[in-house]
Length: 630
Image (cartoon, rainbow, N blue to C red; front, side):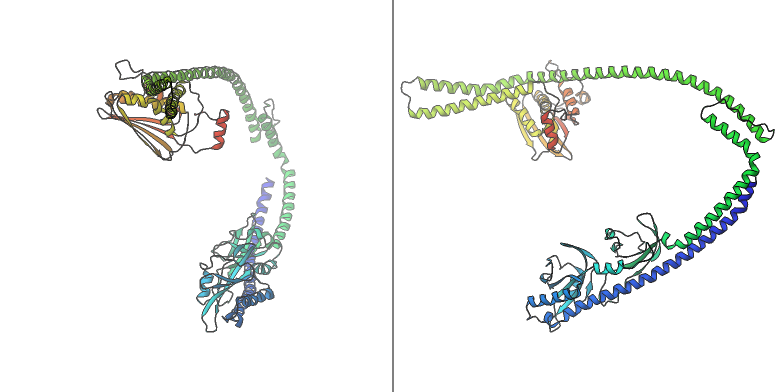
């Protein structure tokens, strides 16, 4: 209780001193800002004197007889310009520019940039002097300000613009030598609040931390230090247009208020010592009250560590004694509840272990079933492919018959010619022509057989970059004879610059083969089949449109189901479109169908386009598993 009374007595004194410090700090902040503003005005005057002298230098140069006289050579004028540059050592470059913005001569860089669009150049050729905002030149890297003045001839007519590139390092020297305490600095910002001058040159042309609207105040520095600052708008009393600059003088709060902070520290030490003395006296007085409470606190700490055997030594019969008895009773109930919870935790742990074992067994069975499903699906695709090959057999035989008949005919003709006693020289050329026909027919037979073998073999799951136009061409090379024999004309509208896809050519060929076979069977009396390809956003769209009998509306929802077929003559297995659906889905694509009875059917396959990746293509060639479709 004595500790509480002591604190009540000392707190008003503490808050009174705190209020006094706050009011003093506010007063000193205003004074510091005013002093910074005065320094900013003095800096503005000094920079203004320097810029006025630079403007006068350019005016003197422009009014010189050697520069105004049009009869004097450019070399003489260049000599006058260099003399000004070397004498004052303020300008990085002085350039003479004609009225069309072309460089006549230059003292240093001979920079031939786009002068015509520069505002200061336009002001100069219109008869006005102008000072540009600070900007950089790259070779060598310098920060400069352009001072442009008109150059008039003897009759007062403007003949050119004289532009001096003033090195900003001269302005930085003025700014950098100004010191304010230990942390104060001067900076110049332009109308976009970018720093044009700063002691830390890494902050040049970066956005300043100061409020572009408020003239003075406090701001947070990049290093989280609070700054006091004050600034003035630049007014250099120069008779020409000048960019909107603002000179800001800033100082860290800690440095600016160092005196009052020292006073605060001293008072804080005194208050701390007084508070410690009050606490020491209060502890001695209140030991009799605090000791039982400490005993309860030790008991709570031991109980929180799991020791429920502790019993606090409190013998008083007052409120603290009743609190101790309640604490002992609570420990008894908590210990009982803890034992029950442990027992249930053991049972729960055993149940979790059993569930984990069941999960492992279930995952193993799911993996086995998934592997079996994939094997069955692969066998189903191969079965569908063999069914398609069976339907292609007649067309392939017809396609092979034509070149084989030609080979046989030309071979017989050559045998008759060789059987003669005297073979003429002219007949040798005929032999060559017939042999060429035989070679062409044999190559045609070879291509047909190779395409059929490639289509018939088991396809791997590896993928590569493909052009759907090429896959369609390979498919039609197997089916042209069969389609022609069934009086079906194929019209191709294959788009140019079709995007590449990432897929398996053999599987996609099976999709296109099944769709074309369905179209053929839908046109028993002949018809037309239109195959189109086009780019569609980030995908490639392949369309198969026939003029067949169409599909009834009640069957449209089931055409992609396995073993569903509308062919009642046992010519269909019902697997073709189901396999097509699975293959397209594995390629991250979609296949849709629309049809009208008596008008025909349209199948559309949409596959995602893929940008050619040479590294991914090489990995696929090496066969390291990175080229699978899914």
